[in-house]
Amino acid sequence: MSLKTLREEVLEANLELVRRGLVVYTFGNASGIDRNEGLVAIKPSGVPYEELKPEHLVVCDLEGKIVDSKLRPSSDLPTHLELYRHFPSIRGVAHTHSEYATAWAQAETPIPCFGTTHADYFHGPVPVTDPLSSAEISGDYELETGRAICRTFAKLDPDSVPAVLVAGHAPFCWGPTAGAAAHHAVILEYVARMAAHTLLINAESQPLARELHDKHFLRKHGRNAYYGQVKTQ
Ligand SMILES: [Zn+2]
Picture 1: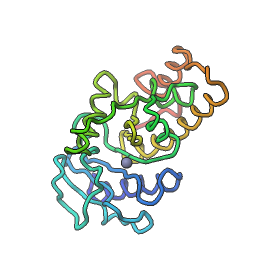
Picture 2: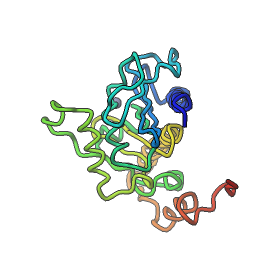
Picture 3: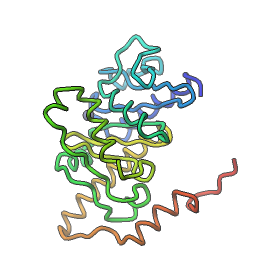
Picture 4: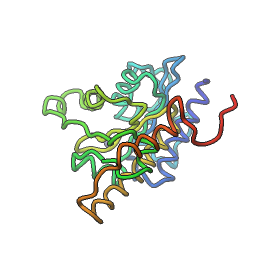
């Protein structure tokens, strides 16, 4: 993938977050990685989305060394890099403060799978991290946020659950491209809103039966997936 293509993909992912109403002002950011080159492109810090151009995106290596930019990267860059280093299959990360997903993060409550919409995308509840300690907050805060996410996934598959709620903060989502990460952020917000409404209608609502949950996730993902059209390439 050329750097130009990576920049365009990441710009498009950032704009998708705005188009779908997940971002107010400059909250939120999306990034993408070229695994062959080991280069990450991310939204610059504090630049309004409506002014964002491909050339504004900041390109750095996996250690955060800037290789091509006059602008500073999003302050959440160390969180994105920690996810790329620990989840080798992912090639895009999206972070928003979307209303309902953030409300669940603030409540420090995992989002249960109440229905097949959730099960189509997330194979299990969307987990929440442990709160960061005082030392983590006063230390390398954004890196520690990434580490907290990775600890949460010590026994979870990031490809099966492509999102997390950072306690007291907001969601991070990922996927095989920057666009997929943004797509997951949109779906997460939709699922988070429906889960809140489900509990409002009936506070005793129970998670979806495991069989139906597995059925919906596995018909779209994995070796025996059959949802959608047959891929010809
Ligand atoms: Zn944030």
